[in-house]
Length: 353
Ligand code: AHG
Ligand code: MN
Ligand code: MN
Image 1 (cartoon, rainbow, N blue to C red):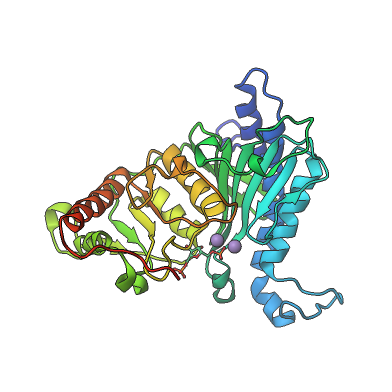
Image 2 (cartoon, helix red, strand yellow; image 1 turned 90 degrees about the horizontal axis):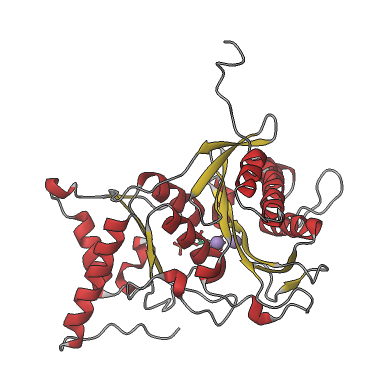
């Protein structure tokens, strides 16, 4: 094959720069931030691949062969991401699942606030199942001359300027959006480079998968129960029963939902009235990606999740997201049943935990 007939591969780096060049006056800072995340994720990916062998060589907390203390993989990932954000000085605050408090970076003038789940699906590490890193980027509201304040972090999801995830699966893939579509880059570990592998990802309008932890069925709202029963009924015309798929790593479940369509749900329930997932570093970034890919992400009332007001950096939220047709139908079920409830039957009121 002559060099000219070879398929021209676009690296993450090139793609980011091309995107930046499309905006006159762009300072390149967001591009720098995405590159920093790309680098940190390569280091995490390497470590994730070693996780099995690390188990043989020493468990978290013990000493490895170099005499260093072996860190838990989620703490390691947290550290790597924080190093990356410290490197370029453009991030003033980081909010991480691993840190109770807001982390204020040395560069207090940095204009970005980043939320992250450094390692999502961590209960799957020990069983060699896919895990990931999730990030969400906001522009701070206060002037960069001033010291960043807590309010800079409390912004609704619609204000995100970028969001994405890295999935450490059978291969490592970084998927992100800056608000103009969604693109995916697969890591070639032999040369340590991400290449554009999934340009302009569009979620199918309808998909025949539903993804939810069905063990919690008894605690769900009646509308949700009815919707899941609908998914299981046999009807050839509507391609039912749908296929149930639940990995238990949100990143992996969302990746499948983006590519194959269907619905992913982590609902409110009696045991978990606000659901389990965190609004700012699990739900919002995924909702942004799903919308940018042409899908929908809503709360239990069928309202757009990205418009939810936030009061606490670690707050939880229920989430219903995926292909438009599936999500709309689920929202309709929940609405329809709620109407019946208000006209007399026993209401679903999740008890406080
Ligand atoms: P994390 O590992 O960051 O705590 O997140 C785990 C999350 C998410 O990845 C997944 O969708 C969900 O927990 C699974 O929860 P259940 O086991 O309750 O289904
Ligand atoms: Mn998580
Ligand atoms: Mn986590």
